[in-house]
Image 1: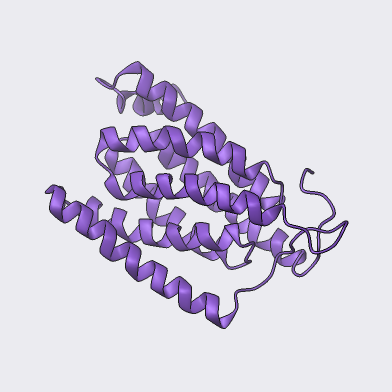
Image 2 (image 1 turned 90 degrees about the vertical axis):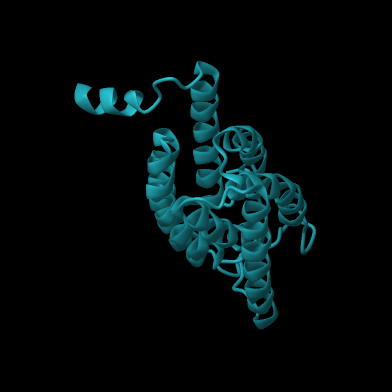
Amino acid sequence: MSHIFDWIFAQYDGVPLHLTVLEIIAVIFGFLSVVYSKRENILVYPTGIVSTAIFVYILWVYGLLGDMLINAYYFSMSIYGWYVWTRKVDDTHFIPVTRTTTKEKLWSVVLFVLAIVFVFGIYWFSGRLDSWASYVDTLTTAIFFVGMWLMARKKLENWTYWIIGDLISIPLYMYKGLVFTSLQYALFTVVAVYGYLAWKKNLNKNPERLLR
């Protein structure tokens, strides 16, 4: 066991202590956000805001521009999602989990393509399109853009995007030396599977509480 911890912390040799501490804090709040999302708990948004704000800074330092932009996008979408989730369909019930409509599927494709083009352009003009990690980061950014939008609208299919993006992100962050973040995405994958099953069970059921 000590060898595992030695290997993990060896990845942080030469990394400023404050970055490591910030990463751990962001991972904790990010994990809490996913757990709250699984439960349809409104705390998904304040915890997510803390995590994404920290990651914007960390990812800028590490040069992962795509994921930096997506965390900035998460921040703004969290405000939007907070509003949508707290809307009521009547005096006692909130917006339910539903499946994506044909129109929303079309918008998902449009958002995915626009995100690919936008992030690729950022990498290209900044001169940082210099490794496979940049291309993978562009792909995961587009996947997560769609996933976050669908989650804010309480669509069941958001979990499919999270699962795919999380699985791709595990080796990406390990390669970049962000071991704690890579482990976070491994946990995210497990929670996302359970989240899909939980939301499917609650499909079209109007919740009476958002804190549970």
